[in-house]
Length: 462
Image 1 (cartoon, helix red, strand yellow):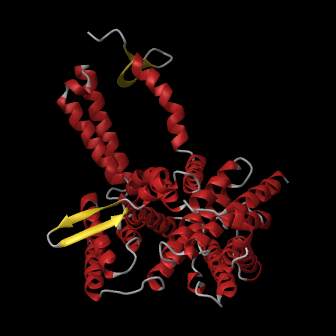
Image 2: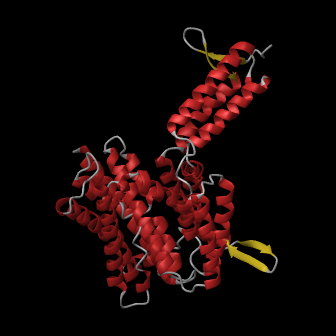
Image 3: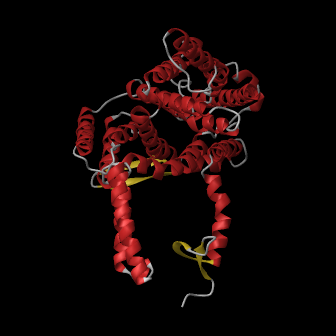
């Protein structure tokens, strides 16, 4: 006998539609969770959460609770094993550790775009790659020109990269008004931006290199590549070796987040079972399951044979997907909803001296960052895109116009995450230049985001 509050799902003609029991309470909980699940899967949600964390950090850093906020950011903890002791404050663990997970997801997106995405098409890829290059080069030049006479000129990498989460969040606000190809253009552009920023961090912002640990990292990376070549698709070996690679790169002196990108590029992107084999195996298993179910009329829980068939079906389904896609699906939401908001909360707490803001805004560091992100990004991306399409045989995504590109170029001036990251590498933690740089990043990102949204809304209305 079934409990009275348990039901089958039935179709309109009375035949059972699926073999799953559900209680009345479960049905009510599912209805309650449906809006929540939609909310956390929305790109606007991630951007909004990022924005809320920035606002909270700014409020705390400029309130009577500023000391509590600073103590929280500088909370120290670490790992001790054998004769090795790793102790760092929360900001370093987030920036060097958790952000490596973000770079791992970025690396997965880079590999996917190169293999099956828009970067696989030469005519479109060449436009995006060159546009991203213009969007990185011109802001760096502008910042350097504004600061070549002071000791901040080495921080030219700050206005180079675009914050993907914020930029895509703004496009999502206008999702029904703009062509889908614009999302593809911006995503691919942001990925190339991130690749450029990672290269700059590895080559320019690395102060010293320990050759022993660097060679160790190269050896570990070669093992990861070998695992990919011989067809190892289990997650655990890549996870363990990826963590070891992170530690080796950290000890080598190169920024540890590079390990995220390198590990991601070794994750297999080939399924073990092709589509035809998967279809044949699934049909066979479903036929066996149906015969067994009609014969016994028992649930999966009560029949070990049916359970074994379902387990086999799950195994074949896993073989038909790729480890790259599975990793991306698992980590995408945690990175967007936890890692990036935590990074924003830890790094956006800038003490703003409102009485001196009028004077500080004239500082070359702030001017260089604002001009680099707002003006440099817009001109660099749009002008190179126009030149590549008009004179080099490049192509824009379907239904995307140069008006869309101009507005999107301005939105790319939102450089929060990567700009904050490079700023932390450019200046000491207690340096006044770091506060000025973060202030400039916040002001420039706000200007670029608001202006880009209004411009794109106007263009999409036309």
